[in-house]
Structure formats: C-alpha cells, structure tokens
Amino acid sequence: MGPLTQIKAWMKTLPGSSKWLFPGQGGRHITERRIRQIVDRAAKKAGIQRAYGHDKNGRPLYAVSPHSLRHAHAVTALDAGVPLNDLQAQLGHSNLEHRKKSYERAKFGLCD
Image 1: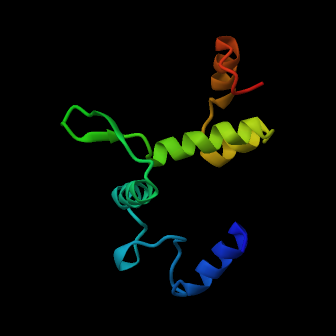
Image 2: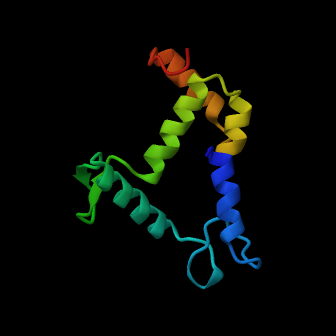
C-alpha cells in the first residue's frame, strides 16, 4: 500500500468533525512536543537515535528530530530534481534560493 493510499485510509478513521490530519487530544491539533516524542520513540525503536550534545537547560539534543527529518526531505527533494520554488512553497521558506547558492559556493555537493 502506497503512502497516498495509507493517508486516505487514515483519513477515513478520523471523526467527521476533525479538521486535523493528526488530531491531538480534545479535537485540537497535535502539539509540537507530542510530534517530538513520536519521532524520538520511532528513532529509538529503529536503533538510530543518539544524543549529540545538550541544550542550555541540560536537555539532550538528539540526532533524529522533526527538524532533521525536514532537512533530510529538503535535501533529498532537491537532489531528486524537485523544482526549488515547489519545495520552497511546501516548506514555507522564502530564502531557499539563497541557501542553494550558499551550498553551491561551498561546493558541498548537495545541489549539483
């Protein structure tokens, strides 16, 4: 079953009154904290989670996070040839062109 088919099946399980694809408690949207918990739990279960440091409050910083997944998606999409303006709209950024040029100047190899 492909991702689109899975999403459509998931949507059929949601209450008719839900306006969120991933609702949280009480019909509200899922919180950022809950998303971080889900990603962290899945990464630990897969054996790919590791702490690489700590924030200013002493909390661990993890290698796999919602932000790292977003970044990996963006890099993979650019490498696959997704038009920059489409990716920019999807991610809600206005300065991806600047970032792409920065990578090209650095010869980082992500945007060839």
